[in-house]
Length: 432
Ligand code: DLL
View 1 (tube, protein in one colour):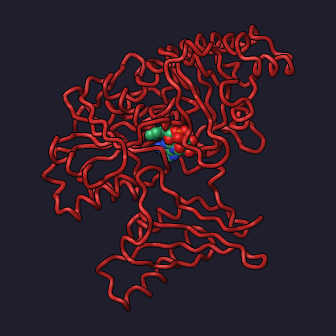
View 2 (cartoon, protein in one colour; view 1 turned 60 degrees about the vertical axis):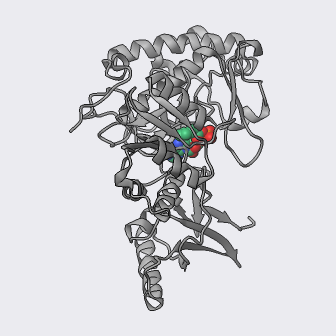
View 3 (cartoon, rainbow, N blue to C red; view 1 turned 90 degrees about the horizontal axis):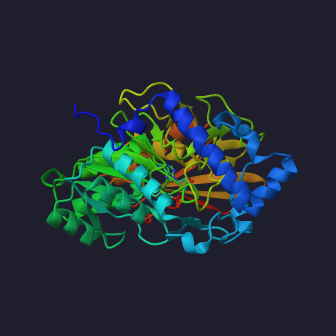
């Protein structure tokens, strides 16, 4: 069993009292920054009859107003920024494909703190300064590429800044340069793994040891598939551009939840309808207050991601609170004939039944009835007669897990589109 690696043990394993003091001091400063420099927040405070002095510690957090995506859109591009433009070191954006893209910004200090989160994630996955880190997240306004890049550099590792795309070349570079860690979306990791096999490259012959995968929900079943295809250990990393980028939370060697960098990003779980806080262990919407940010210090930002917090001590020695692997986003959740379905549940059943995690969910409304069809790739080895029974088996498993009947269509191997970034899993054709 390798010993656990920390990037900043003084904070990652700090006592809860110490964390409370750090969080309280930062929240007080942040609230003054918001009130003094962001007219949007000043107005919200005034409407609530709240003065910055009313916030004395992190225990006062619930007095503060929420912020949501629409607020960022309404004030596009720079309306919620707390510093003049000339103090910004970097602009990035969310990868949102619907509506107006959200612009975020960072001071040099913000870039440093964000990079620390990424460096903590890489170290927790076992990456060291002696390793080569192959980054196949997209570089650009999306935070994936540059986020992991800066984290790997801060750790002292050697970066191979590949960006995404041209998958055969990715495999060639993995082989030629002998990378030890791969960073990309989990769906792109499976594509790289499949391409490796197609090119006849044995992953056991590569020095690749681990991967840090995130930017989209993925199941433990998909983790096993990636580990099999690439012969590595796969770790989850979470983040959103509004909060920072990758490294807001990350898995450690125990891989039982993602430790949140709560010295910079303070988490809450709330009921998405009532906005009331939920007890630890209960699933609800993840909300962050960016207590360590200067340029875009968001108060109680509603991420829409569905997860739960775990406060029990982790076997890795970190004291930072953990969040469960996100199930998906509340706005990704499908309601089919009144039943809530997350694409990640569908993925779980597919892989559990021995299929590859390449799938597409099509939803339609026929008359007054919602129908859901799941397209899954069959194995190359399946004989024609076996395809029908495999589809029936999968359909039965879906019914027992999801509680609704869905149609399963088995399509040819490699028939469904592959993704080099975040995968699109749902086509909802309902006109509601
Ligand atoms: O996806 C940042 C990131 C880059 C995270 C690389 C990890 C690795 P956005 O483009 O703003 O930022 O998208 C944020 O992606 O609210 C989640 O819905 C989803 N997401 C991110 N990481 C995970 C994860 C980046 N590990 C949105 N598991 C978030 C599930 C994730 N969903």
